Image (cartoon, protein in one colour):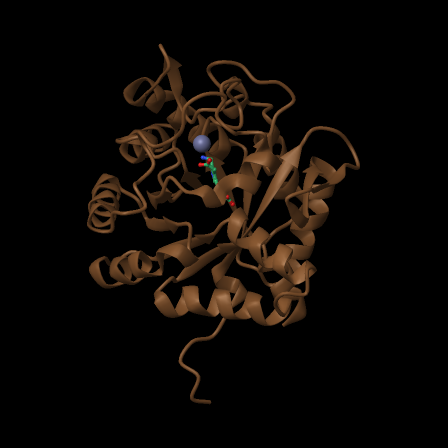
Length: 303
Ligand code: PBG
Ligand code: ZN
């Protein structure tokens, strides 16, 4: 009765990885319990996710082939676009969110266009905007740019509006840190950079004031929901963001946070269920309105 913070699956988003093929459900080694799913299997998971009362589904794509400009990200028959259409056809009441980035689709694994070993900010904006538009055309209810290029929110907003998608909101990964905790995701999506790192566009873990600036800029460009990522190592940033801004604040409990709990639980080093609830409760207590978590489906089904 006196509990201040409660977990509500309706305010959670379940991220999944969609791959080519049929009947594929391949477990991700560094994320036990999470899978690479072909479109048909992703539809099954989407049905379960809706039935369990989770608010949304986030789609990451694993394309069959990659190139230096990430064509698969904005192809009409790209893997995420195909999954969106199939889920849209079969599942009604679930917010479908497209992850907008190029790194899963580029052969060099960077989130933008690369020239002479440098990730080019401005040259990447149009490709990101095209990705968002093609996802909206395929049925995405919301798009979520995770690339961290400057100016991509306004570029995406303009492109969506021009394409008639004025009602499709943008959830921007606004304060996304250059984090070690994305390691398992890069295994899952095969998106580790072939050279260099993401420190030119993702944030320095040492900076919190700068996060407020990044968030403010994204809101000014038209972001409807702003995200802090990762979650648990950055609860102070979540709290500051909640106090400083009006739009909903999302926090992403990332692959490394998931993997830590799973690995320790497998070793008998901590109680899995309690650790899951405690970690998510802490993220919510810090001020997150929306949580992206690989535990969303399991939690909703067990509540
Ligand atoms: C790609 C992207 C990443 C994540 C979401 N989108 C990884 C990265 O920036 O390298 C991380 C998600 C996770 O670790 O669960 N832009
Ligand atoms: Zn990326």
